[in-house]
Length: 118
Length: 164
Image (cartoon, rainbow over all chains, first blue to last red; front, top):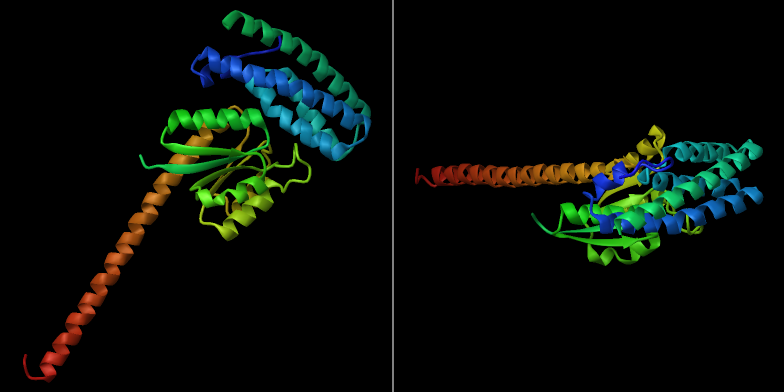
């Protein structure tokens, strides 16, 4: 597998025993679910809906782990913590923006992976 | 390997799908059903699941859904099923709360959760085997005790009758 900046598919390769069809299935699920979660986080942040923002961030966390997007996972953990404490709304906004930008790069890398292994 | 009905109750489709695929690979004899809410799980309890793999956060998508802890408490009160709790929370107090409510084990939702769930299932099978052996031992012990009591009683009666 080529080296990518955002993603590390070592876990996914191991989990699927390098089964390309399964890898594509999980990557496609992530590509479908993660953008929706990011949009939801943005809406919840704008509405000051901290409790639900915490839950959405919490759900996104393992998905990022499965795709090996570790740097952004740390940001999502901080979003979850701050939302739970209902503090640092500005920092949360910046963190969501960072996650959105980083995930956009990760999505492109994952689409590239699909193109290569499909 | 005996058949087992297993429920995966999780509102995160990706994790639920990966768990189902992992368990199907390891235990082809399992009948696995996936549900996204505790209410759905409850409606299908007539399938008699031996194991329920239950997410702690079941209200991430459907905000009005019962959370995992409420579902766990209900399952342990109403049914004889073993529950393995899964959660993104790695806080010890959450794990303790679940174990106190009757969970067989608590697994943190991350890359290791699939293997850890499998380990929990293996331990559960061993635990059940020990409980089964213990029940058999107790049953045999009861039969032996009543047998001895019967022999003593018979000896007393026969002695009183002058037969012995």
